[in-house]
Every structure is written in C-alpha cells, then in structure tokens.
Image (cartoon, rainbow, N blue to C red):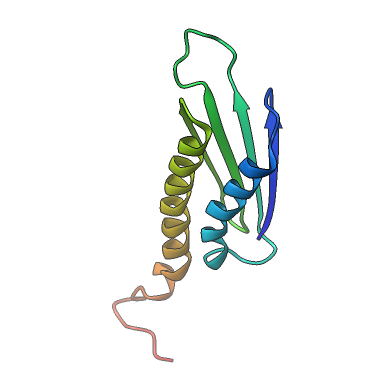
Length: 114
C-alpha cells in the first residue's frame, strides 16, 4: 500500500502524519501492495462550522475507487472515523471480489462439471 498524506488549509505536523499512517496501516493487510491511498486533511475556517476538521481518503483499487469523508471538531477523531468507514468499504470490496456468482450458476439446468 502506498500512502500519501496531504494538507489543505492546514499544516500537517509530523505527529498528525504519523497518527494517520499508523491508523491507515490497518488497511495494509487487506489491500494489494501497489494500491495507492491518498488522504487529504483540511480545516474549514468558517467559525459557524463546528465540525471544521475534515479528513478525506481515496483508495485506488483494481476495480472501484473507494472514497470516504469525515468531519469532526478534532483532526484525530476525523481520522479515526475515516478509518472505520474505509475498513467497512474495503471489507465489502474484498468479499465482492471473492464471490463470483457467474462461475457458480447453472447452465441449461445443469451444474457445470470441472
């Protein structure tokens, strides 16, 4: 897994970068080595928006592109929620790849013999 952490309207400190890399490292077991993951951390400067810390991620897989976005008052909480959402999406993606219904269907009422 190739991870890229970017910042938009916010300085990415080494501690936030390390936190994001550690949390997103959980996905490494489930994704292929060449899979690219882009994380963009941003802060909305509008004082009327309580959930101003936004974490967005895009995972480029061989099949669909997985995206998630989370916002909260704290950046670390946003990253935690983002990782939870991505774990669910990756699990669903992996299960879909494993089950291939077209190979297990009957043809003219007969089960294909191998």
